[in-house]
Image 1 (cartoon, rainbow, N blue to C red):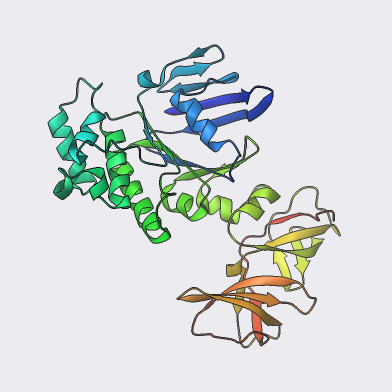
Image 2: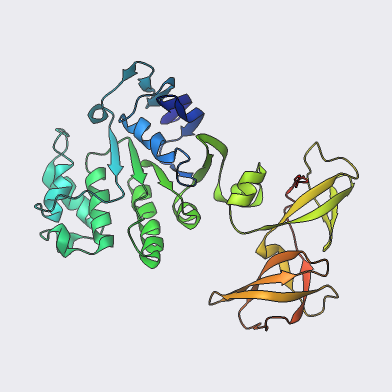
Length: 350
């Protein structure tokens, strides 16, 4: 069975500058996917190509098995059954909430506007403000109106271009979960573009890490965090520190904190120098441990402290510690290694 949305070997260029390079993505029906990357990596251009705002210079884009884009042939945006939620929401200031949502139905002749608008007002929890205007709403309410308007004609694919970037952090996290719930309730296939990792993890089933117009790795949030395929992904996702290590046996590496076992890259044979990724959850505070590390920085996070710890060698690691363990800067504390996923790469050349 083919995916609902397919990008096959897609390339896109602005003049002589290639922005997307041999991009292949498959998104199944009802899946929420995310393109995560730094500014300028090409992720918004992907959305524009899917929507039909930009042509492709190679490859093809298909929705529901129908090719929408190929070199020299681009189906217009209004004929693609694609919904879009923009960064600035783009609501009509002179229309009420209900009429903004109904505007999305102007070309959907087979859907009864009044019934669909009522359904979506209930879905996004805005029945009580149906007759208000956008300027009378909070940012979160405006975002939900924009989502409802895009969902109104029951698009095959929903595109969300940094939809939470204009909201404060607390509202962004809450709305990300709300949007996920709404999309799942409607069984809508969606692609989100963002540079915020927490946002991507909160809303997406699968994530593609983008760099320089290409996908570095595609996988679930768990896979990207615990099983990064490249050093770039390991550096980009989460917080982590690389410690030097040496391969001492089959699938075995010794680092300053002890021996770690797990799959190693083929290039890392016995005696090979490697860099081992340590996450804050790999370093456990343990008063009984003979291994000591000095607190050099701490960040209070409510339930936890994020400690930066200096090892005897001078190397540093991060550790998440319950916040009732409040240690002073400069204080030595006991730690031990509790690593369930070995992530190692050939030693970086300096």
